[in-house]
Image 1 (cartoon, rainbow over the protein chains, first blue to last red):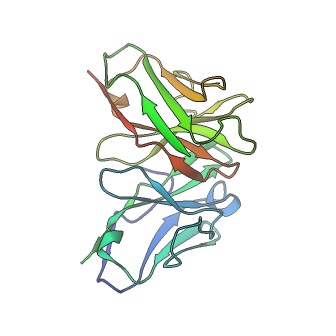
Image 2 (image 1 turned 180 degrees about the vertical axis):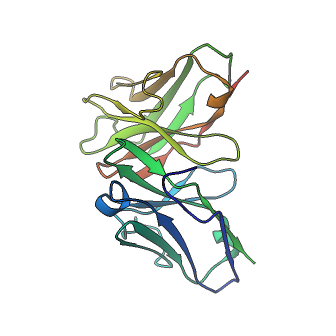
Length: 110
Length: 117
């Protein structure tokens, strides 16, 4: 069981909005920088969000990140079938001295 | 920037896993960037193994620290991973990746599957 807690799955219809949560503690999310990754089937993870809410160049603004206290959230608007993937949050844990990843959330676009 | 992992796809239990990550299109000696390894058991989530700066001391996941060595060869633009005393639990896709000081892994290799028999 991961120290960072994500819902195992979320689903929504094309065009709709979905949010994926990542719950942690004061030693990780609350005081460090959260990243989000998209992993399409059979491919390497891809950075979607870094520094809690920043998007790398080339990532559409349909993807957004936010953080409040010990939780972080990834938002995806205008869902497309191509967004079906596993999504992971990641952050440094200052107490454990390790990088943590959430357990992953499988997004289904119905 | 491209990263490419290479190494044996099959390792016997109790032996040492050795992988290399070749960096092209950029220098592994770049300022401000770190290089790390992340693994993913089949059908499971991501696990950080460790990271290093090209001229610094590597740092490792506490759970793997006793078995792992990460090093950089700047002359070959390569990152390497050695993991000793492997078991079936080490069967995974192994990725090399680049990150900044805030652990945002922004470039990844395609990954290489290592099976421990």
